[in-house]
Image 1 (tube, rainbow, N blue to C red):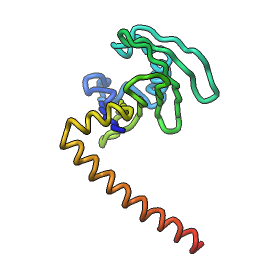
Image 2: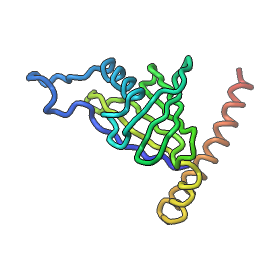
Image 3: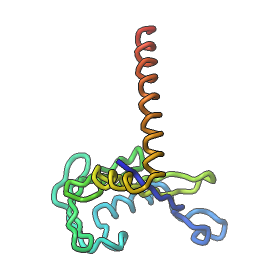
Image 4: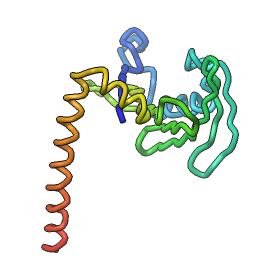
Length: 161
């Protein structure tokens, strides 16, 4: 599967107060992200309506309309990680959408939006783009080699303990 991500600073320089202090705290941003997860209309231009279908101990199931498409998503907030995960429970080309709070090199709050494509569109992209196909093959082989060594190292550490 292919994952794409985009990161933006939450407070642009012009939104700070006269002392240059950020207007947004991590807690305020988290509350706003939770509100957006339940009520995306007004936050996500492509979503025209949304309703929560069920609630769980660790999140909720929502139905959102994006153009003519009706999306069903299992939403899981993780406050400790500063992340909200939207797993698609429908036939969308997207498997997962993630909103991740972070900080840039200056300590300013950032928001990263990432999407993970399902297998079908991922395969199509890799077939059509030789650069991404080669990159995928190279890093898949690297990950295979890394996990083999990590597995052996973990077993050795367990045997030494």
